[in-house]
Picture 1 (cartoon, rainbow, N blue to C red):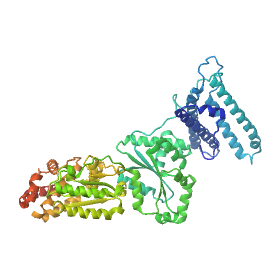
Picture 2 (cartoon, rainbow, N blue to C red; picture 1 turned 90 degrees about the vertical axis):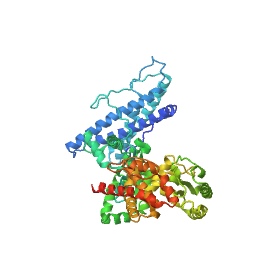
Picture 3 (cartoon, rainbow, N blue to C red; picture 1 turned 45 degrees about the horizontal axis):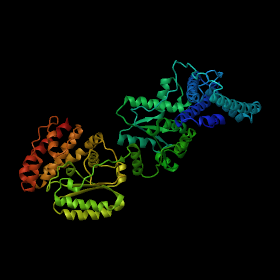
Picture 4 (cartoon, helix red, strand yellow; picture 1 turned 135 degrees about the vertical axis):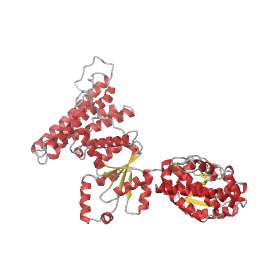
Length: 599
């Protein structure tokens, strides 16, 4: 319904009859009748506006187009209602007298009469003629309701037949029907940002664009585009439902033309009625975010006088901008920290989900017996903390099946609540003592909130990706939620991480000695892995990675001994011999990298 319009009350006999319909038919009828009454209210208002002598020719033409659209929709909705109402009839009485109109036609007339009563009552205080009309109109509604109930009873028991519901109205084409517009299959998620002036709508949308690759769009732009296609001068003069359908139509058009874009943001939501209608059309595909902040905070951010911000607020509030909070999926206080705001935005833009992970024991990862026993005891100690510890995994070589005693590290990933950090530290000290010199241990300790807010380093993102691809974990909670990591994200992460890896490898090369063999070799493998990701090649295991990297464009083949030989030389004190084979490969890669960037 449009604002301040009366509801349509169906007579009791019809209401009882429709209550016998199936749930699906009842909802379909309720939607058609509700929309029909809304269209009639909008049509009344449009016909009032077009009579304004101050309108320009363009505005009159615009109103006429709107009236035509609403009339077409009115007839199509009445037909849709009759499709359901017709099922109430007793089809066994073919000889029953034929009534002159359908049930939906009477409902349509009742809707118009309801509006007529309401409009006359509004002006009755200042219009004597309107005041005199009201009792007669109320009597008409009472008689029409009674007549409709009688007709329903006659139709149900077969005393009357109904005519065919098709109206065959022509409005610029011969096959018009109300478009049952739905989101395109290419339209992914849409986040709509609303709020008053300087609340952070544009800043939030830009953050989602930068971090999640969203496409930013303005609601005003979309409506103007749709109006241009349909020959309308003022799309804001249309009903909330029509505006929502036009918005969805443009979103669908854009999504169909950009099929690789799966996330969109739209700004700025200043009309609570149209965004509510758009939510009904899109369902959970649309997430409405209302950003709230104190007036003083917004003034301070704007750099404008308080009066200027207040004036902008007044305009937005006149359109219902402040009422968007009541229909929003998320209301965020943007007076606090940027970290908190961005964490919530990322949970909306890229929500985490339950992790279907593969679980294994420490004894199934190819570890030596003492290391496996120490690892198993550590996992048991962490598991004793209950749901506060949500995941324990050994990433890297144990998961890839390439762990080598005396060479490989133990890269430990633990997801746990912050308040159990002290207990994890105690367990970690016992773990290190049990390992002794058998393996070096590196810990990544992250909270569940950091994961769902996607506060991830490139290496952590890759570790999560590997777990999602089937690498085993040692423990995880059933309600664990993990961010979904894509190969595209990792390719972008590789671009960010590679410079630091190359700088470190260049430093290690400068200080190359037998003691740095292990670090130098591992950075060579890591650099090659990241370069391969940029070329959309995904290899695991050092030997496979170095072989694949040798096929990069213009890079001479890297002649590096197999991992087994390099690690054996390290463990047996022959590091200098292995270093002589690793250094040339490092030099080749550094030279190639410098040439590529210089080009």
